[in-house]
Length: 422
Image (cartoon, rainbow, N blue to C red):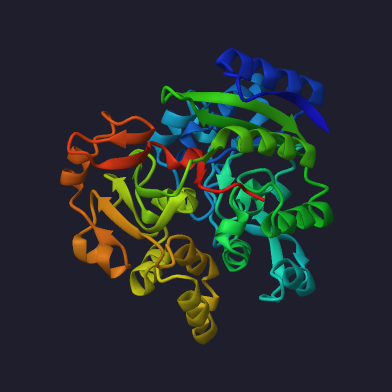
């Protein structure tokens, strides 16, 4: 059921409108006595989910007993990040998710479903896992809060992915990510219905019907003047809510350029992006716009590591972003990698498959480290001076010496492509 919807490509929803829309939906739900909010972490800072979580706390008061950031494989949030994102929401309400423990398996998707979704390439079973708190916490409302935006693993982020990945476990996260990588990143990004989404929907339909989940979904876009605007708010408990948000996201978050781009410069805000694990959104979201033989320059002043999880960081350093054929070979030959399919999927997602050059300008990694994972290196101070984000406008730019670039200020908020999506 859809409890509230407000959105359109020309909308610019204010804080008051977001709050009023949220309160309208929560009122329609009726009285609740024990509520948990499951918002994204600081890597989705611009989602407005932090503000909506704070407003949910103001609405329910002490009936909102827990906030569980859906960090997935990301590092736990710091106290400073919690204050920055969720405002005055009491810190004592926040719980940490551990993707390696504290899980509940709701059910198992059989191998024949995975085989069909992967076009016969995979045949494992898939556990539908969530943080055990969602099952054992005696909640009469689970508020899953987040932003719908093009995504490299599932097509469009959020909806049931927020639970099965954001609060999921090792096996579920690894295998779902690998399914997406094997199916093909560029066949998935920006699509509303994909094999990975179908997997999550199967799990919702078969195993999660007893969870009292209501989805609070935003759509946020960058305006022509470079400012952010909330284009939509959709609140409901089923797929209709997601599909309406995703359809709007396709309108406002996908940029179709006139022709393939020779040089793209992407800026990764240091307050959000501290690893290539997250910073490679610059690769995922721009790859379909870059011409063969072109270059992506990633301005990453905050990047200090490859993986936010120490084990994943070690695997990325060992194998690097080596492309699909090599990753498939490595997984087939190495049992260790079969237990880390999410990391191997990331090595696929972060590779250009040799089609264009990826040049990283990291604030805290050396040339040797960057080149060891098959990226090119450029001095970050020199690159930031030449491609100063404060002086560039989103889109096409011509520098004083005549160099032409295409600048993306926030790759996490969109998808750039030189062709229409089918």
